[in-house]
View 1 (cartoon, rainbow, N blue to C red):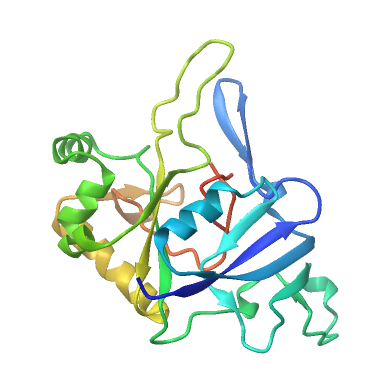
View 2 (cartoon, helix red, strand yellow):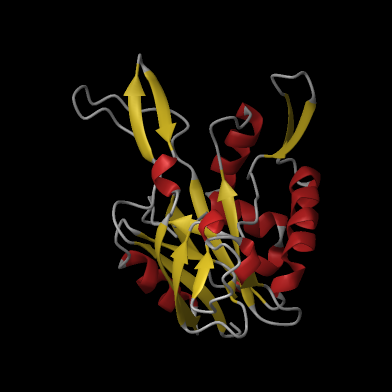
Length: 243
């Protein structure tokens, strides 16, 4: 793996993750706590995937990471406030939690996050994945080069949900996050677009209709690039790391 740098955010007070509740028999997500009005951000160098795993496992509920690194010229640790509070002050030690302060330099190593959401997976694709083995085995079938790549895999925040009073488990709450290293951080959008196409070619694609009636093209391993922050999950995140 090429050494890379990520950004760790820490909220001054309260958790930096969503809350999940059961209301009228339905799972409800409240992401309001993911907002960060005050806190800090710092540079963290990652030399290998084990270091990333150790970092994530030691996160508190008030911490999260971003896959990009702080822009050149910023201190190694900065204060974070709301974007509308910056008022154009130009203080290099104060930023907002936005992409304006993160970079993904061309030719520089980085990380990419694959977010696998199984709740709407077709039965055919689900059966095929079970035959293949698991999510990582499926990804290696889609992209054979993954077989030689290290990764960090974690359950998502909404994974493994269970009603502690009744013992009831909830189908579709087995989402996973997989982080893999890349040699060119700036090339990640192109990589994920191609990966999405390969998912379809390998039988892991599906279509759905939105509430507005438009056609939505999805891959069974819903693949998204999160250039912003992944809260501590389970990336609530204790997997986390997200945005």
